[in-house]
Image (cartoon, rainbow, N blue to C red):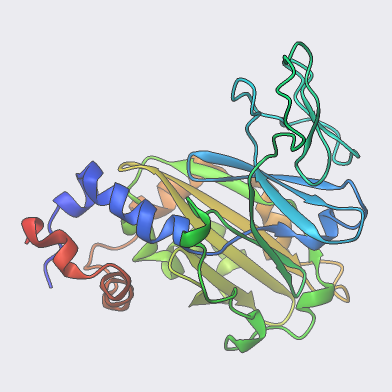
Length: 293
């Protein structure tokens, strides 16, 4: 099949992809080791939206849009303390407890309501040490299927639940997400250089991949389109607790967008991977794009 160029440039196509793929899929946003105690919180971005995941007092995880109900400013910002019993918007001092309930709002006139405003909760799951978020636009859009279990994947490491995790590393590239997705396996190997040569890469959801390097390292890769020509690539590197050194794991913090762009440009010319588009059109029927073919 010849893929028309408009599928990479048309913003209406991107809107369909965001609605029917990104916001109806589970995304791996971090590792449970960052959320071990009540009040611990994890700040994460999926596409153009920001979320905060918190560990509540009873041990459950909760996820909220990172957007204050007052004026829409971020509640948690990069550099804030990784743990707190309250979610406090620094701009106007609106405060929320770990259930998302508003408990303090300076200058807010009394409403007479016995039910204070609350941040909207989003579906969040914890499995095998990984934290998954369903960034659905509404409760009716939450995926019915639970996040896939990594141990169901070929060559999944037995140590995953007890793995050591690096912070999620995200870079932004000026490229349509499908051009990256269709060649993700060879792109990862080229990007990581010698450290990525042994990677075995498997699809993990519509916009994700799970990669293993022998039995010492695993990578969870997630794409999040920001615009038709701008994509976030997030990598969560995991290593076996019995392996103190891993070249692939140790390479993560130094990876930058220019390296990725260079790796992409160095790939040999060729067609896209057919199996990616088979999965793509199974999730987004081609009838949605009849005007493009």
